[in-house]
Length: 274
Picture 1: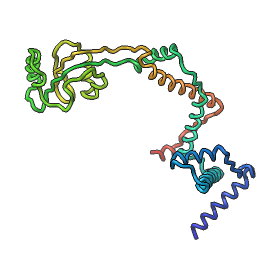
Picture 2: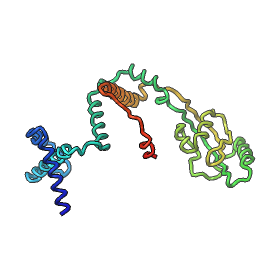
Picture 3: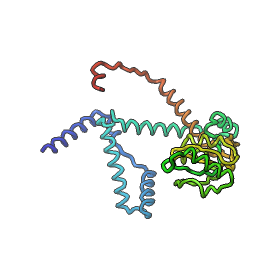
Picture 4: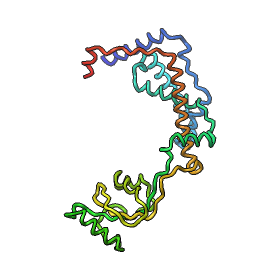
């Protein structure tokens, strides 16, 4: 009985709201031939065959059901004060603004100037080839003294493979980027390593694992690339930034048409948020 009363009340509210509407135009649902073709094409992509007449009729009726529920929900004001609905509508408007944005491809001069405005984004970081010998502090009473003795042997021609302790990392790295070295050994280790030149064994350099003796064999210094080397990456970044600029400009123009009043928080409201 309660369920029937609830359903009856909802139908009464819907009917009452509909009576206050703009009339028959709001009750007209038109499904174009293009929409029917889209439904059929989507069905065929999913099931790898065209729909039967009955299946197509079911697709159309499903579309009608969605439209009816959508219109009735709006008539009842169910889209009001709904954060998710508002966010989705905002995203749809932003997508529309992106579609209206100027899609003229940038020329080389524009991309070069964009690179110069964002040097940190496009600089090619240092790369190093090096060998490291690891000394585990948990296995040594005086790691500094052990490092000095090991360094003497390595400098005198000792084999790196026969020195140090085991570590679940590579012993030899070939033209590893600073980012890769950071990921493996930590920021402090990487920053010290990129300052070294190919000039024999040195150390110890400490990481989160312990002490390392290091021999740099090749170094490519940090440099700013030519546009031709990374043109695709630069153009993508340029396009993303340009679209955001255009969206911000469109928002600023729309914002001019609104007056915003921020009411002060009352004492009662302030207490309720604590």
